[in-house]
Length: 235
Ligand SMILES: C[S@@+](CC[C@H](N)C(=O)[O-])C[C@H]1O[C@@H](n2cnc3c(N)ncnc32)[C@H](O)[C@@H]1O
Image (cartoon, rainbow, N blue to C red):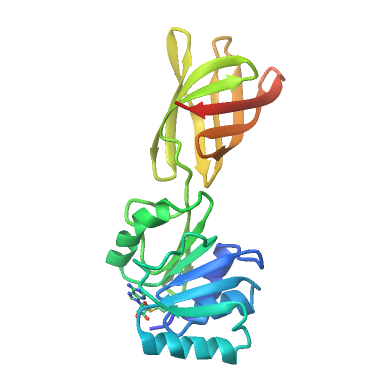
């Protein structure tokens, strides 16, 4: 059961695939997603297919399409073969297989794009759902892990920052002397984070930055015109 061409096209566009990407199609079938990623988008791609005859047939299709240099179909089990180097992962499997893959996908590099034809990731809600004649394609950005306590450094002035995270959804608080302020507009998209809070002078401060492991760095801007750089370190 291959994914129809227009759905393949939308999946690869949702993931904004370019020549700089390494696309892994998990459960490659006849190889059409891996082949399209290479042929139409110039990416490097790998399809992992359990069925040895199918994998051979798919590799033949890649050769016929003239993209065998960039698209490879390998015989393997998606629960064994390492695909951690992928920048984009595509899926057309079954609900239970998506859920079995979910912990591995969530451990991938923040910002990795994941697209699934037909099947969801249950309570890890999609960042985009596209429809093609009743067929759905779901898109997720793998979120960074920011859950827990951080020390915020506003260019010398420190404060305690705390996030509660469920997949890409975050809420948080900031220590403001005797009170704990709630964060506003807290948002995590891959490794990009933004939030705001109102300080003890009643001034709203907006933060945007980037998460790299146990560090965050970025710039802030306050309603009173103050601007600067900030960083935060995981506790
Ligand atoms: C519905 S087809 C999708 C093919 C292709 N990705 C597409 O969208 O056109 C799913 C494929 O996943 C393969 N598959 C299922 N479980 C797998 C596993 N654990 N490892 C590798 N391939 C698997 C099946 O053999 C089948 O060819």
